[in-house]
Image 1 (cartoon, rainbow, N blue to C red):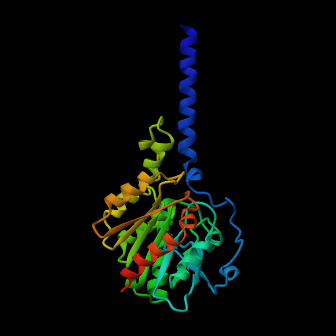
Image 2 (image 1 turned 90 degrees about the horizontal axis):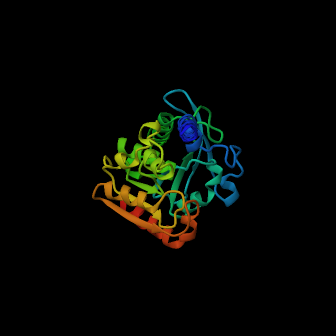
Image 3 (image 1 turned 180 degrees about the horizontal axis):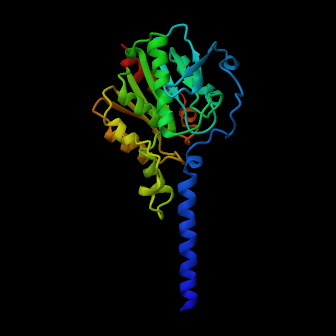
Length: 274
């Protein structure tokens, strides 16, 4: 009996250590600014596009870096919130797609990413998104009716939060998750994640408060964020919504889907720019 109790005690200790590890390291499990790195490896000029470096200051005094890539025949502007790894220089292929769709592109690095300063927090990323919106609508004087908010992966949650606070022409949620607790339950079904996770990124709840048209984009082959997560977001969204199914994995779905992806975005975007 002593051996059994010792074994149970050892197992309980391991379980508690795992709980503590997940709790205290969850920030590093969500944000990957150093993978593959914070250095900018290219600029839009590498794909033949002119661009402007933009420096923003958030409401809490953090300096952010971004790019504004103008289109010579712009029908509107897309503000782009990227995923949890890398920086804006790793998104040139997407920038090229939006340029092909005759859109100006404004993309920023969140605090702690790329050339942006600051320490990463959930509230901080929302402040970063709000600073991007203020830059477009106030500094550049672009009408909200000409702005598409786009977010991919982690950026999908940030984009949805922003769209729930503002009135853009439309919102595109690509490869998004319903919330951090939902994803945590999938990854750690044996842990009490509902009270462990202090990050929320509650996309499913935010999308319920959207008043603009919504396009949800997801792949059945997404190996990181399951297709069901995208479907749940779509079901929670208001009535003015569309779903675009991709092929391919989490990071290359838009490339694998190719022209069907581009044309799906084109139809949605240009039907909602007034």
